[in-house]
Image (cartoon, rainbow, N blue to C red; front, side, top):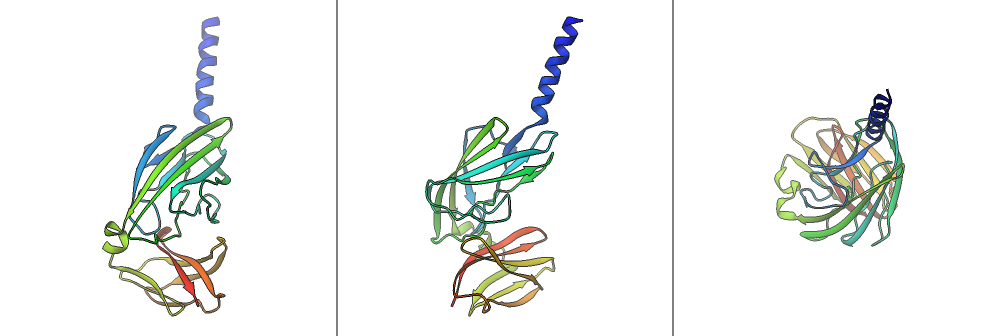
Length: 227
């Protein structure tokens, strides 16, 4: 009886550990704590494939995700809560949220910026905390314009000219334009047709970041200047 009680207690403890667990995932593979990986940037504005968070347990988890740019390009952190934090080198950007069982979260690091050069480089540290657990992943991100999605997806054209967003898509889909201030505030939203223009004249003069979301997936994101 004593042996059975011990085994039952051990099994309950294992289940308890598995009930609350969260991992970093890249290319659908779970990353080990402390992993250092290299990511190739395939679009001017976001990682491909992204470094994701996944709740692999069976309970709802409260978590905190800190993102720190260690060197190179300063990349905004726009995921978790839908707002963007614009970074300073070496200063952690911290957000907290809740994830249900099986839920995946895209931190959306530099999801709104375009690289300023034909090539780019950044080193980013992700730190995940929940309960008394802390896990880290460090990513070296290298961008090469010669393999940008913008160069190979000719059916998708989005650019800004004369204070207007000009767009053209060959394939019909549900699309939306989101425009953000440099502080990360959403200042304009517009449903897009297959082709057309969206005026930005109502916005004040300055620098803005815009994205086009297609069927729930970001397909274009750049920086623009309203004059």
